[in-house]
Length: 180
Image 1 (cartoon, rainbow, N blue to C red):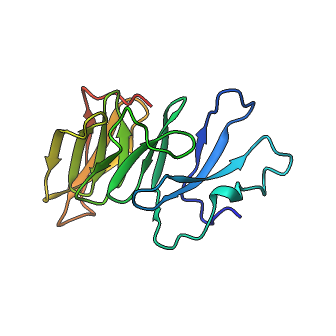
Image 2 (tube, rainbow, N blue to C red; image 1 turned 60 degrees about the horizontal axis):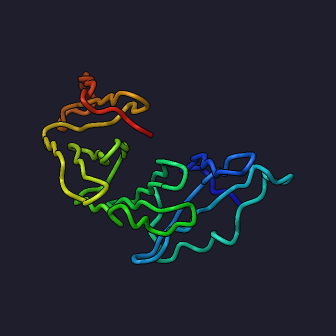
């Protein structure tokens, strides 16, 4: 029941439940709620049980690339070119921007206290989670970037676009501390 290879694996802590839920996928249609594919660890047959109430064929649905629990009832779901903030039922959070849209394919997303940083092949863009305003942007077509780590500090690698096998440069992005 769980897709192979497993491309998404995120623990979701739910208040009052003994074990976290395991999110192994998420999908959404434009204008609709996010549907999570959940493995319930509290079940005796958890190894094979998937919440089928939230699992259906993909069809025209967008498939999530990243899922991050921001607080006890806020989940950030990242798709190819947009990010949604929803509750545990997949419904958009009224207190936050319903969707952050980017004009590039997102490779990695990092949550900060009041914004989201979306990294792509040639740079990064930051957007406010409350109003979707652009907070920062870096674009350099001559370099290819990859986030190596973002648990606390954000570690970024860059290589020349014309020579991806060249030695890389490593950067520690200061002034940004991942909050989630």
